[in-house]
Length: 133
Image (cartoon, rainbow, N blue to C red; front, side):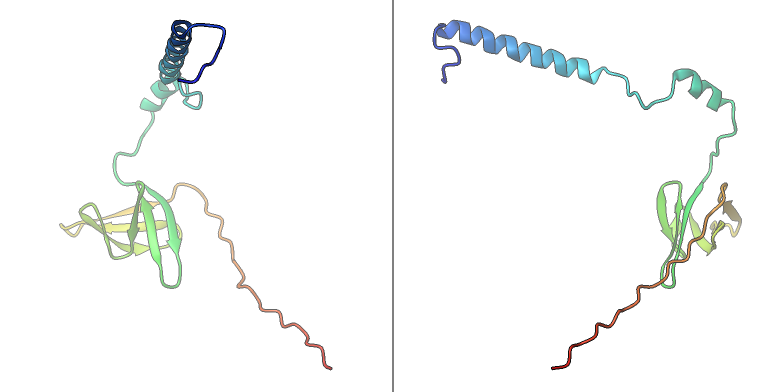
């Protein structure tokens, strides 16, 4: 064992190591009981319970490309024509997604906020002039 304090005996070193281990374990236990500072106060959750909270699927995002069309529904990525739980995603645009259930009923999910559409220009190639010798 490496001597931490050469002037003290091994028993004192063992006591210091035990004390250090105890302090570290207490720090770990204390850290596990700390409240997450990013969480809202408990009274905030009581106010939310009184509001309308969606119980069914929620359209969170829409991804539309030339070869790729998908929606994020309640945290799950669903490709157009594929299943979300028992329903099939049959229609998709910038603002809504339509799910069809096995009994042929449909549900239209709509985005509840405005979407800012941005056009991304493709990169252009730049030709470099070559020096003539």
